[in-house]
Image (cartoon, rainbow, N blue to C red):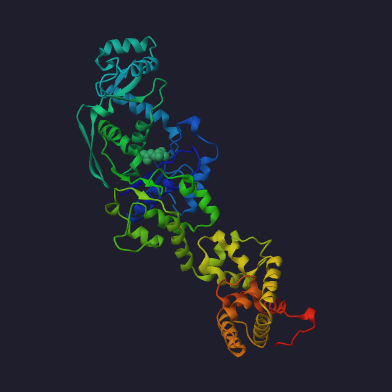
Length: 484
Ligand code: GLU
């Protein structure tokens, strides 16, 4: 039975890199019909930010990464806030002490940093600089009795430590490079690596899927699993995600929060799809995958170890592909929360037709307003379009008026016949290409180009269309109708 966990720290908002880790855990778990757990690593009290946990959970829910156990919904392995498990961590550390698997270290912080500064720490892996491991147990007991502060240190063997990684294969570390590390601080609080391992054991986590940045923690954690008599989980370290200059992901590129993507209106399925491709591929050239496809296909075997590069343009492209796959009704519903209704007070069929006209241009839902602007520009932009038609001369005005008359005769108002009517009118007027479409578009929307003309006309509707096309007539010169 697969059990995975996503272990955010509530120190700020969820970033894309973290969300990718959650995506891999979630898809992998769903693939295997397992249980996905949220465990909150909140023991670094000073860094915790009020409200951050709620925001992280909201972002995860938005992305559709629903969890089976977690701080808000409980579960059989709770509590799921690490800060509420401190007693359990302490107990587990003391158990290791009783079993002789860790030793008390009386080296004070001041002593340790003085030694470090003088560079006389000795080779790492040779114990603490005070050689506390060699202390006689009775002496150690006596000092604790006297109230001497002690940490608990894990003795790292001076040998090669091998860790099996599902992505990288066997990874080797040398014990010397790690050195004996503290698992319990003098104030009785567990260190990070120890808490993680105790919780992973207690929560029966079978697969630890996380970013490559945690690889250096893994030998310590592996040794702790061994010492606690637990089976090591399957470790899988996802490749790093770099910015396009192959350096650390910058804010501009997407180190920015998930909240920002939400605000822009990237569909969650597209974000999950894109993030799944940062380190994994389906093995063929497909790049646009539905959530169902991802759940059925994602496997750790196909995760590569080489760095992935974040590419905002690619995310935008994938987002556009997901939007293109939606039915018009679904797209309209998705777009509605992003609509600026004060500018575009569109409802019902008007909204539907407006969205239909611009849908092929959308990369994100949030772009809906800038594209609707093409159909419903400010009055000043429309007036400028009319001026341009006039500026082009009588021929352009004649074309607009002729097209208007032809459209006015139509019994129905549907995109395809509308476009055909414009072309036919152009033929009759002896105008085609730019000579036909530029004046018509300028008069309609104030610009020489724009979305599909038939869809634009359908979206504007009969009254608005005829009114706009009528605005460039030479009424003011008393020549109205002369050119029709
Ligand atoms: N809390 C860690 C983080 O936010 C995750 C630790 C882990 O996955 O083992 O990166």
